Length: 454
Image (cartoon, rainbow, N blue to C red; front, side, top):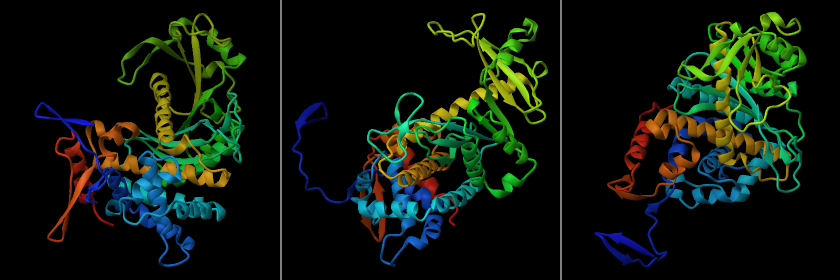
């Protein structure tokens, strides 16, 4: 191995006899500190207190927190907890892999997922009070994804794409005005052959998502809550649930023969240019309303149908639902307002794909256990990990670091190394001066320390 100094190359001898003063994964301690500062660790300890068999044992709430930090830090199996356990100066006493498994197994055995939900909701309420709350209407996005299983696991089954694994359904709160992008609210682990348009599953996840919001917010009639989903959400049971709960909805609508005939019968003058995120007219895309041309009596009163047409990109193949060289997409909504703005708002649902991609990069890609209930607990740990990243980025970071996805955040901050020094009963963590993001990490720790204590 060679290094460069003052333009000269030096051969380096590598030894393993350094002191414990050098620590790595310094940025991950920011996530652990965020959990403590928001009261998440305390809430988890309170909700899981019944699992603690003796005083000297590891606190189950602390174990859950460490597992979430490990997932946010890039781990995808229990053995990756060692990255935290081998650095007690930063993370304290971290449970062994066996102990962590026993906590997960106990949560699954005693059906304590609801306890995790309550702890997350308590921490979210405090985070919102500190500023991690979106402005404007609250938009909940529902979407499902496929998780491949490479071995025979409980609940794994064939998927509609010909694969084998699971088909979890997730809910995220869209936060376009906050750097973190979106907050994870709820998730339901389902077998791979679960139906995409199962109304019962959508209602379950939506109910859990609403429970994650502060009660005062949900009960406030002046705060609008909108549920967005693709065509899997266009079921009478789900939309009736939304209407009963005073929730607006915007869901995809299948292009049935009646819808297609109504689209093709529209005069050209009814089509208006679609707009992009900045409000400028798009070069390709037009919007029109079909409400008057369709029988919507079976849907909730006030429902509207908006359709968008656009030319497929070069090389794309048209399907049987396309006509006249256009590709059509319809949405069903009960929101008032201009159809062009509503169509753009529904198109922004694509941001949930970014959140799901980040979840897969934070442990969802690999459900490591054979037992279905244990994997359901793992899925909730992924949401806790995303909670910590979102709150840390929103409350402690700014600029590009507040927006970057997990992989880049790990490279720049979470995996940064440092040196611990102790003097006059004080500890100092020294970051490498040459590391480009050292000052940003130091500032993040300072912002975390400045947050009001519980």
